[in-house]
Image (cartoon, rainbow, N blue to C red; front, top):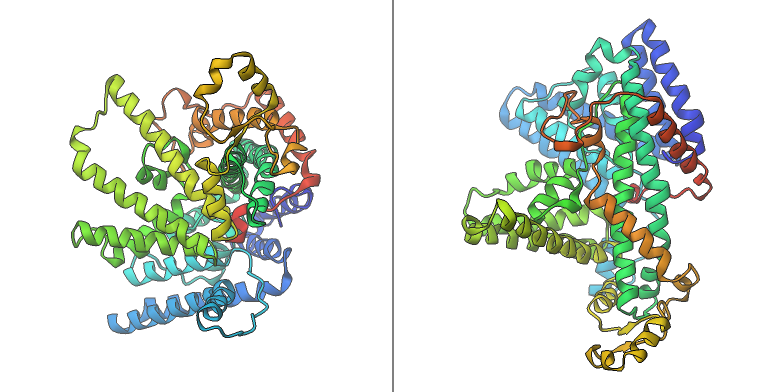
Length: 524
């Protein structure tokens, strides 16, 4: 079930909300069980048969967690942990990577092994990683959960089940244990609905609008059509902002829905395009996944404990595996490898030049501006591989971005150049005035470059200059007021004009739900 659907907004959510607080009068365990069953229904709305896969994963990992926690010796506990992790990764590998490996074996060996007909279960990466983290924490002695009802709710809790965030047991279960969670708080409802509305607007009005420009460009490249400079950058920037508003919108909607039930999810998205380095970018983008990769992969690999060389190797390995986590395609591997190399260069730059870099005054601001612009361009280049269906399509897009496909400008610009004859001598070779989107007519049919330019400016303003939801609502995901956010720090105060504004935005977003599209991170 999608957050951005009539079924969720006007049927599922109201019924689950009312049932949760009504049943809380008869006992918190009953209310928690209701939320667990509702979450299973939410998951099964997509395909009921995969509920059994989710339940198998839950029962298996709960049992293994019990064995790990009650093992008589450290060695036996570690053996149970290794077995559980292997089974989880085998399950994930079968459903997510079987066809990928078969295809590569065929390509290398020349065989023709038939592909297995496998449908990727929604959210399998998220509920698998969540439970692996739980098992490791049990082994470390920092997590214990032997109440199956509580564990079931921890894994299935529907606001995070399909596309994250990746949760830790210690973040969630104490909240479900508090008695105040089971009483309606109007301030939580007001803030939750407001954040949800902002997320819905991001998804429906912004992400889906940018998607209309992303699809034609990447589809043309997949068919072997070389986009020119403007076409390539239109596709690359459109996807960059589509993914931003799609994922940011989902994170806001998940936080907002969860607040209705008095539960605070961790922040998973913090204006990543404002980052002035790749290191900072990964502290702001998909924050819970970044923390998972750091705590359960990078550090166990050795982290930075064995010197700079091994730190760089561990960074690249971690990011390559993080890329592969996103999808069974070599383009995701390349995307992860690029970010691994970016991180290595970033760390090397800091270690060599860090003490000379300006941090204050005009020079500091100028340096940060240039660094942020360079970081953004590097991220856009990597996103091309993330979005492309094949390596060849990504290369065509990159060639277009660097001008190898020529630059076709509007005919009106050509008339201006002709009127100023000397101006033509300063134009680079490969520039023509045949009009934009001549290689991709579908883009031209959408009104030319003008509508996209206006949409792009609006998107960039929001991305770079506007406050995000946690800044607007003092939300830090830990139940505390968030200090130190500058002029945008606003304590939530429900006012009539705010309600009217958000109501209008909600109505506008709902009016566009006839074009419902799934969230991009659902496929991971």
